[in-house]
Amino acid sequence: MKQGICHLSQIPVRTEPKSSSEMCTQLLYGETYSILKQEGDWYYIKLDFDGYEGWISDSSIYETKPRLQSVQTKLFSSGGNDILHDGMVLTSMGSVLAEEQPSLELNLNELAKSFLGVPYLWGGRHFSGIDCSGLMQVVYKCVGIQIPRDASQQQQIGKPVKFENLFDGDLIFFDKNEKIGHVGMYIGNNQIIHSHGYVRIDELTRKGIKNSNTGLFTHSYHSAKRLR
Image (cartoon, rainbow, N blue to C red):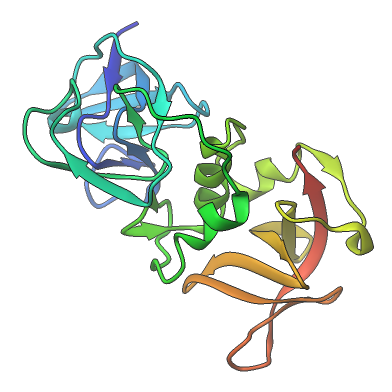
């Protein structure tokens, strides 16, 4: 089975082998994948990080190279000192770099707040656009905790937490017609950070999310999980 690596800032992964197809997720710089099959100019891949599968075009294929595993924790960075790229490349939080990074005590709240104002993008995991579950996955990746890609999958892991016992970093899930469709992270003081229109902070109640601008409820509370 052939292996590939993301050599660009980000690569869209699509649900079908065509450029007009919906983006289901993104590869971030330095993330690796297995090539499962090929159809014309498109390759069906499986991400090594979370097992997610989808299609990328032949122009995005790049053979893997031996490298160290160091996760970028800054929102974005640019430079040409990585073994994949000789020139300037703009990388996003969650990218995998070759150079060793200093060991830091990372705070989930501060990592998530780095994305404040970043626009919502279905399937996005990048500082230029990110969806609700992508935000949670990237932030937790930075502290060495691997979680699935989609909100419904994320809700299946971790330890259940009662609303009155919520703590910073807990994942909060919301449903519509009994189907999990949204996730955010508790940051204390009855507040939640999540990607809805853009990455924002809103009020969290037992009923759900109360928009801090309009005062309207936007999501219905379902459950909470603790991952560490």
